[in-house]
Length: 120
Image 1 (spheres, rainbow, N blue to C red):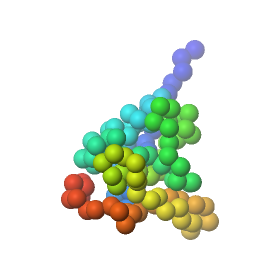
Image 2: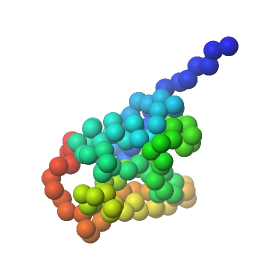
Image 3: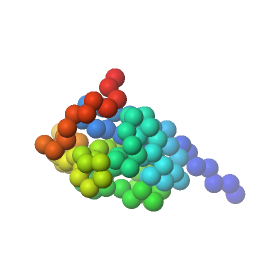
Image 4: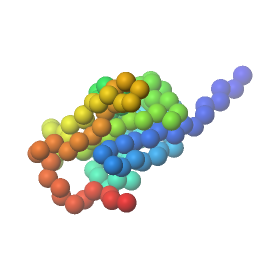
């Protein structure tokens, strides 16, 4: 019997920006991060995908399904605030209207606006 894998859509959010990504559940988080980085014109090594529920970074080596990322899920992304990738924007975990927690990326005080962000 044939296993049919359905494509999924994942919403990646940062501050006021949302990027809709068409993905396969078997895709690695790192590959999705690389595509997202290209879309937002940022170096992939300086982009991190976070769990929207708890703000924890996803493992770039695991697949979306291994990380529990499903169709229409929201993930958050943050940028490194240092070129070496040692410091990252904070992901503020806030309670949503239904009482669950959701992370929202916020610029840390250390982040300088270098103007290379993709603005719509």
